[in-house]
Amino acid sequence: MELTKPEIIDILKDDSQNDWLFKLADETRKKYVGDEVHLRGLIEFSNICRCQCKYCGLQSTNKNIERYRISPDDIVLYAQKAVEMGYKTIVLQSGEDEFYSKDVMCEIIKNIKKLDVALTLSIGERSFEEYKAFKDCGADRYLIRIETTDKNLYKQMHPNMDFDNRIRCLKDLKKLGYETGTGCLVGLPNQTIESLADDILFFKEINADMVGIGPFIAHPQTPLKDVPNGSFTLALKVMALTRILLKNINIPATTAMETLNPQGRIIALQSGANVVMPNVTTTEYRAKYEIYPGKICINENPTQCRGCIEGKIKSIGRTVSTDYGFRNEN
Ligand code: SAM
Ligand code: FES
Image (cartoon, rainbow, N blue to C red; front, side, top):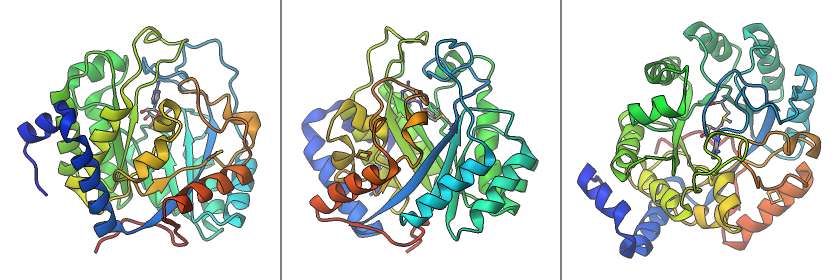
């Protein structure tokens, strides 16, 4: 289905159509990507960050968190354990931490790619040369959310960052042949419904291969500590519309959704999502990667998470995929 901006705005504003919307997104998901759910093993390998994104608990001005870096050898070990548990994709995510230079990242990528697994990076803004080097070493996918397409809001939320550079990153990644993921936050202060409609149309315009949508959750050690959390339902609606418009892409049921609603990921899987990204590091790091409070699974280990999420997926009549889970081009 094609939708115009005014139609998207109407749907986002009118909650009386929600059941129809979620059902249509679920049918679109089934038709274009089937009943399999792809599990991606997530390694949050450093919470050190040079940025000052106003919403994020990892921002460099937050002096109240204990910072950590997982060594390159240990990152590869976590990846190996995840592959042994059946994961077909590893996602490496971190703050923008310069310790992981081009050479350090290339070494990690080469070692993980020896494990016969797809590899996604989510490490922020880098140069074309760095993205190219990572691709040449075997990285398959890259996630970098635009966060919001409202340029003024982007500027307010990201002091010292440049909207155009974020766009440049997305274009470079596409040009280099990465499966490219982006997405937005829902519920930022002063964010309009019109701009959320623009976000959805932007995902379509750049032909994103993956889109992650998460509600904003206020972190007490950030300048946005007193801003109310984003709405779970509105985030779900943005996600459902993204499925309806982009059809065959991969869409995660995000952890932030489950933080706001105990059934959040299952509801998301029934409203257009087809991916889940369980954490595969040990508990010592999970609580410290606190981008927002109340993160789920901080006391669980990788085996518990795998069992838990597999159980949930089966309980709704879906199956866990055993392939790499690239974008389904059919
Ligand atoms: N540094 C990389 C980057 O910027 O792409 C990856 C790590 S960053 C912590 C991952 C995502 O966390 C961001 O894209 C942002 O949307 C999300 N995030 C950060 N703070 C959040 C908050 N308070 N509530 C919900 N999501 C948040
Ligand atoms: Fe971690 Fe459910 S996925 S406990």
